[in-house]
Image 1 (tube, one colour):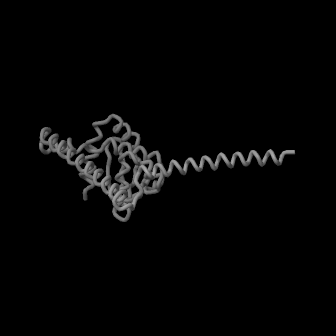
Image 2 (cartoon, rainbow, N blue to C red):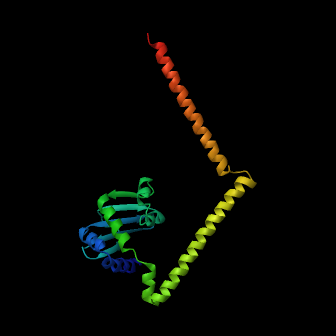
Length: 197
């Protein structure tokens, strides 16, 4: 299985960060189970100096459950949102889960550095620049395509409301709401005056 190479990559990242070594020591004897819905269950544990990955149903201090893409996104910035929305569920010790998440983030392999071990620094840097340029081009193409599609649907087919018209409508709704609130407040004041002796 792919667990041993992945374990090796994570452990190779430990010496790069003082904080990662501190977390590994603090998590000695603790474990986190990661369950990808109906696909696999992996248990990550620390012995204080190294991390180990194993498949199976061994108990863990904390368990994260969700889809594979949702679980992968926990390494990014949207971890809290994934948990709040219930896309990923957490059982057990949340502090242990949070520490393992930080540890995994710190030990995450750098693709350019890993590639440099195979083809050298110059080649890895060139491929990384090429990959970044390709991703940037793909992002810009996707944004342009989305913007053009929205404009077509708004202006040519009239299936969507153009942004400016939508914002103007919402400002109008807000103005009407504020006017109704002011009128209701005035009516309440008049009703109290009339009820007073």
